[in-house]
Length: 316
Image 1 (spheres, rainbow, N blue to C red):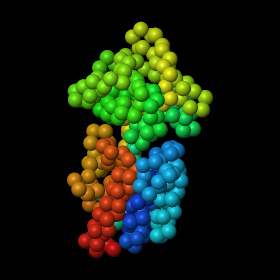
Image 2 (tube, one colour; image 1 turned 90 degrees about the vertical axis):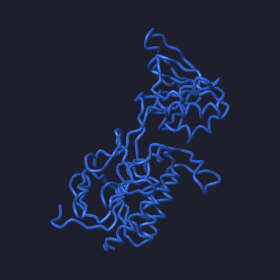
Image 3 (cartoon, rainbow, N blue to C red; image 1 turned 60 degrees about the vertical axis):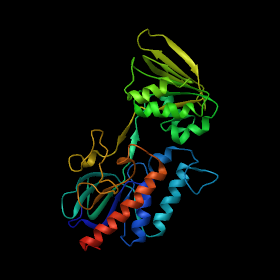
Image 4 (cartoon, rainbow, N blue to C red; image 1 turned 180 degrees about the horizontal axis):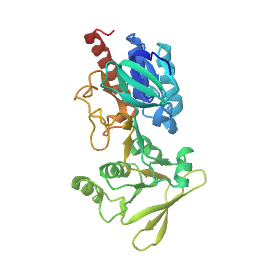
């Protein structure tokens, strides 16, 4: 560890669409941003094969290619992209202090947090295998439902997100099996009514996913009734997991205002947090939309907010 920590005008923590877009705008504003990628450079999109809904790619693009394009664009304007994980921060200090990989201390005038949120998974071996090989396991119906038009799919979950995604899938798919662990749903009454009033959604109560079958692509799901112990194999080509996301914000817990799930709360119409000079963008602050394009848009906002903050503080 050096005696004098490196000082940065604009530190960006995280490398998804929001982080790289913030870097593009910050670099063009001559804020000389340094971006730390985290353990998954490119974020969640690197686990997605086809991205068909990001503007500017009429033929679609793979998630990893899209992130490489965004990274190259950020670097073109002078962003320093570094591999490393920010493990600790003191954001109330002046300047802000952060530690990378628990050892390297850095100080910064502004910090843009773009650490995203990680989807929660069931943890089944075949779920992981088919997810990593893009074999039809997904945590985003809005992103991937299009690929299953006219097919039969299953979705697991019982909250508002699961109900909303099941309803969304019902408009594209022939049949949607909704796997619910209990005899009731956690979703709001309005969302429950929407599900129960949709003809091609079948709710499997008191049910858990025992396995997902298929060599290269999902072919069926094995569902176990947790009351009777009876198992049932249902042919499906897509399997959606909607049991929630966990924002990657533990390293700033207790410093930044968050909701009960750990999503950073920003001042409406901005990316400003409760700490001056600290901004939050992308999925770590957005539990509503969670799309690459909305994350990118908020990354732009974060960089503009940081630039204005620095200008008013006379630090740049």
